[in-house]
Image (tube, rainbow, N blue to C red):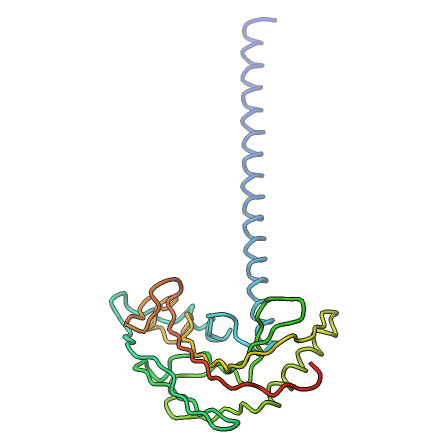
Length: 238
């Protein structure tokens, strides 16, 4: 084989390598883009599912607080200024107990439109388990302004037993029925300022929320709870 022929073959081999390599790199970029798109789509679907589950149950999830519509609004809302602050040094529940009702109010220096999660519940333990569960007398997502004046919460024994029986029936339908071993003698009242506030002044995840009442570790939330000793009359069948 002549020297010129060898050189020509070398040029052809080099060109072929560059073409094949370029095509392979293009394929990798395309696959990578499709994969990132698929992951984004899956994440979006997971987020949507969480919202749907929360809304179907009629309960808010953890410390999130905001509704789906409000969460969407937060993405386009003008963010709070970095040096803007919402001060909270006072956040305490005010309660008065009667025979079968509790008058509940909130004493706080937070703005009226601040979202709060409120629950009045009693704990119980299932047979064969040491895990503590609770059933609500009352639960609501509302605003600070709606709790500045006292509101009456019914805590009659039958309200709680009825809610427990409803839960037992639901769990039994999915094969997870249970019997109750014991019930707490205390009613727990709890109010939380969650991390996702529709008011943009709070900043992302309450970063602009400061003051003596704000939790200093973990999530930047504010909460207060109190327990009222009020034994419940046990029914014949749990």
